[in-house]
Image (tube, rainbow, N blue to C red; front, top):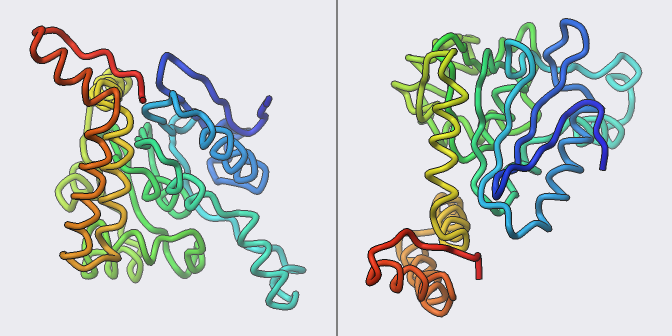
Length: 260
C-alpha cells in the first residue's frame, strides 16, 4: 500500500523502512505511527523477507515525544490509553519475526529511542546522540523505554538515562551496549549494508528461531530456555535449509537457502 509518512522498499530479501520528514519535525506523529504499524502487519505475511531495517529521513533518526493534547489530558482514562495506543510503534516492530536493524543516521531520543530499542540490532552514525528524553520536557515514556532499556543496558544505566535525561554520544552508547556498531556518518550506509548482508546470508528460519529464543530468554528460567533452544534445534533438523547447509558444506560452496 502507498505510504505518506514513511517509505517502504524491498531489495532482494531485505525490507527497508524510512521515516519521512515534514519541515523540521523529527518526532513520530500519529500518522507515522499508524503507517509503521500497517507496514509491520504487511511484513508479518512476507516469509521471504530475511531482514528489515528502519532508518530516519534527513539528518536525524527521530527525536522528542509527542504529548497528549489538552482535550486528551482531561479525558477519561480509556481515551488517554487509546491515544497512547495510537502513538505506539515499538511493539509492532518488536513483534516482527525476522531480524530488525535500526540504522541510526542521526539523533535518536525520546520516542525515537523507544523505536530503536524495539529493533534487534542498532548501528549508529558516529555523530548520533541517544537518550530517553527528559521527564520534565518530554514527559513519561509510553512506548517501552522503561522496560526495554534496562534489559539492554542494565537497571543502573537505565535509571540514569530516564531520571536525568542524559544524552549519550554514539561512542558512549556503544560502550554501554545501547548500540551494536558505530560507523562514520559518511560510511553508515555501507556499514549497515554489510551488517544486513551478514544476517540475510544465514538460513532465514534459523535466524527467526534465534531471535525468538533470545527474546524469550528474559521471561524463562534457564532450564526452560534451554528446553526451548533444544526444541527449536530439533525442528530445524527437518528443514530443507538444514539439508542445503550440509550439502553446500560437503560441496564447498555458498549455501542457497530457501526458507523452507
